[in-house]
Image (cartoon, rainbow, N blue to C red; front, side, top):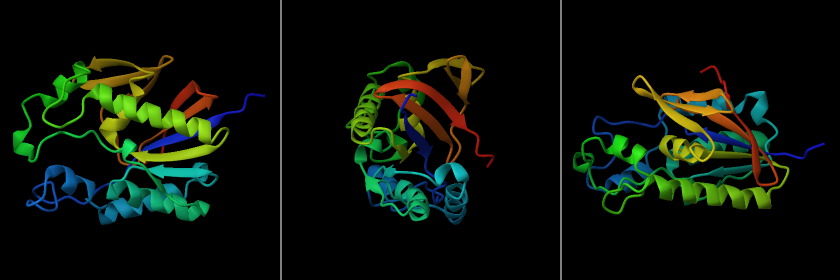
Length: 213
């Protein structure tokens, strides 16, 4: 019998949004982004998903340091009588700008096709993949044969998945494929979750958990 370590990699729930997209125009984009809480619907969605049977036997919970990720993770922690461990290594890709108006045209496309592309003090795709993967590898050693929930962010998760998936463009959307199975076609929904199974530190399977939300 193969002993498996299971990681549920989840995008945070729906955040609170203003017409400007940030909470405080006097703060940098990064810090406003970090402290954005969940919306009322986001709180309800996270609580609803946390009650699914698949998430009731967790051993460890990790979250990025962003408020919306921690606020999502707290429901799973409550249901499993666990604490929420926090690491900024699971945070979202840092844009490296102070205001959305500073973002160059086609930034997302440029970063997607150039692993090293970044602006200002931001992060490249390569850097995000590296920090995410290195941190997961540490968890695999520390929590061998356990079931782990990690609450992270859309871009960080999709960059990480490129370590194992074939990525192609279909129409105007990206398609992520693992062992001929389509994991993702387009953008991640709130609380969308991928189940990763490892034997020691070797990935043996990924599936997209269909939550029906």
